Every structure is written in structure tokens, then in C-alpha cells.
Image (cartoon, rainbow, N blue to C red; front, side, top):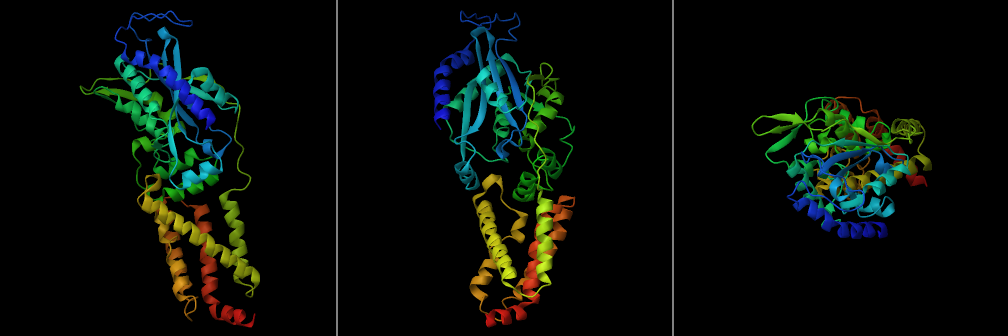
Length: 410
């Protein structure tokens, strides 16, 4: 918090100079400050804008990389990088705010060298993509970013629709004067949503597992364009983008080739234990327990699974009702919902209580078939997880009478 506060104070003090750039009408202006550069005759370097894409980092929060905006005014010696950042750093408080949908974020403006230092110490690479905007568009973009920065950390943050890339992508497109960016159907935009998620999280299988559950409604249908532009995806399509005018004229979206500002020295290692491995082992344990007499171990396993089901079901319902992450529906609500909890509260003392879990087993089996067909690929991690609940529901229902007798003798 202290660092973020100091950053905003620094940005506030610098905003006077930024505003001067945004309002400047004389493209041939000169500056007396150290490091000032003379403006070219065509004013093309009076203000320059570029997208900065950084590689993924060590922490889960940085697993998808980062995206920032660099704005320069060489004639005034100004060089700042704007970044959409959360109000708290990654940690327990961050996780709580993110899961509850209460996370706030805002734009901070850091001097160029200081911005690069934040990635250099973690071995993360940074590549610059210069935008081919007009002078008036560049000035307007600086004004817009300056205004957004002055609002402070008041905007919503989530990993799906309001991350480091989405708001910046929308801001750049918002200042276009009778023009718009257009990206051709090139890889990876040609991939469906599920395939894009795999591409973005290929080195983080647990993040992929969780993300697919949270955006299950989008697994088959298409996301809005701005939601697809995660750092590495935007980096892949930026060189192919064009700026299209209302009269149909076109020009390249970039004013030059990408430039590597920092080499990448950190390379993430594959996960030692993947979701497929973990759930595969747990499924094997569940199957073994299904063929052995009722014991304290099987009862403990069923209790733990029931508690996990209840907690996750309540959270998933909260996510849907509060529309967290921009979601209105989640297909996993078919199997993860409060009905088993209500069944336990209302019917646990009834003779038919355990037989009700046979019905839950049928629902899980049907969803397992539907889920892979819906996503268009075999979702092994999710299928194995669901199979664990399926096996225990079947065992709980089939051995109901035997379990009742066992409980009665204890």
C-alpha cells in the first residue's frame, strides 16, 4: 500500500507536465530540460504510444504475463508507463478480495526505467509494440490515461474481463477518431475459447483447471474481442492489426517492428503434480473404498467430499448471483449446487436418504457426458474430479442399508 501511495503521489506531481502534453497545440515546441529531443518536422515523435507486453512471472497472479502502455514526449523529456494494477499485492488479502469480487484496481504511472526494473528483477521479458496512431489520437490517449490514473484504484478487477489487458484494450480503442483497430482471423484468434484458455495457461495446469470451471458458460461460445486479448494473445496479433477509417482507408496498426526491451531469463518449470495426476490418484482411492466394508476411513472420505461439495456449491452460486467475473451462468451449477445440502438437512433421518444419492450419481454421470461434448475436447481433469463424486455417490447409495447397520452397531 505504501508503494502504491507513493506511486500515485509521484504520478500526481507529474500529471501537470502530462496535461501540458495532452493540451499542446504547437507540434514544434521545444524543451529546455535535460534529455529533451528535438521534434521531427512531421511531428511524428512529439508524442509516441506503444504497448508493452511482459512474459509470465513466478507467482500464479503473473502466470498470464502483463500488459502496459508506454507514452513518451521526447521534446519534453517525458517517458511514462501506465499499468492497470490492483490495490493490494498478491497474498492472502488479495485472494480474499478477488474471490469475493471486492478487488479494486486503478492505473498507476511509473517512469520508464522504474517500470522495467519491476520486471528485470524477476527475470521477465518485456517487448514493445509501437502503435501507429495520429498525433491527435496520441495526445487524446495521454489525456485519457491521465484522467483514469487520477481516479485512483476505484475500478473493478477480475482475471477474466477486467484485468491488465481488457481495460487498456478498451481505452486505446475509445480514443480512435473515426477509426478502429481491426485484427484478421489469424492464430490464435482462430482458436475457440476453450483452446485459447489452454494456450494462455499451458504452463499453469491448475490455473487452467480453475479458469475453465469459472468460465464454463464461455467454453463453447465466443468471448468479446477485448476479453480474448490476454497479454500473450494481444502480442501475437498486434503485428497483423490494421487501423481502418470510416472511408475504408487502412494503415498498419503498428509504426514499426516489435522491440525487445528486456530479455526473458525466467522460464517456468512444469507443475510437479497436475490436476490429472492428483484426481487420478484420488479416483483410485475412491474406487478401492467402494469395494471394501464400511469403515471410519470411508466415512471420513465421504464427509470431506460432502463438505467440499457444499462449500464449492455455495461459492459457485454466490459467483453466479453476484455476477462475479462477468458471469451470469455456470454449467457446473448442475452438479455443484445446494440441493445435496438441503437434502441432508431435510431428509438425513429418512429411510430413503441414502438412496437419494443414486439420483445425484445419475446427474453427475449425465453431466460428465455433456461436459466433454460441450467443450469439444476430453476434459480429463474435470472428468476425473467428477468421477470421484460419482463413485462415492454410488457407493453411498448402493451400500445404504449395510452402512445403516454398521452405524447402528457403533
